Length: 107
Image (cartoon, rainbow, N blue to C red; front, top):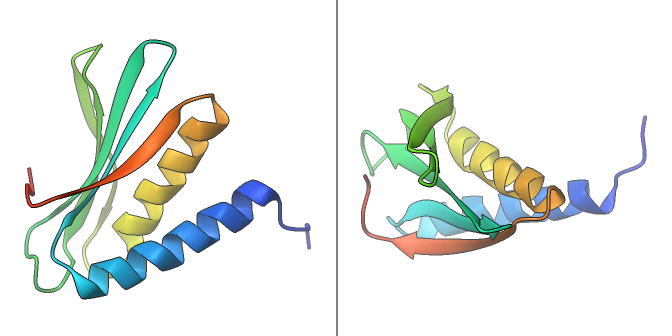
């Protein structure tokens, strides 16, 4: 088994925080990431705010006019939040500065 890296530990802690915040609020999970004059927005969209699933991770590249949905979940609560946090951590590894934003907007 590989030892955990600092990035893995941060991602795991962020995931736990996201799960706790999801249980305590109905806010959409969103990250705004900026680096090298480029912006990326990662958000979690829910069909129903009461259960947290189905959900999808939305990945916007406003500078390039692109939107994708790299992950979706039908039954596993917390999956989309975990993947959104993972993507933010990956972008930070590429030099982006990502900030979590709370919003009532569910896209």
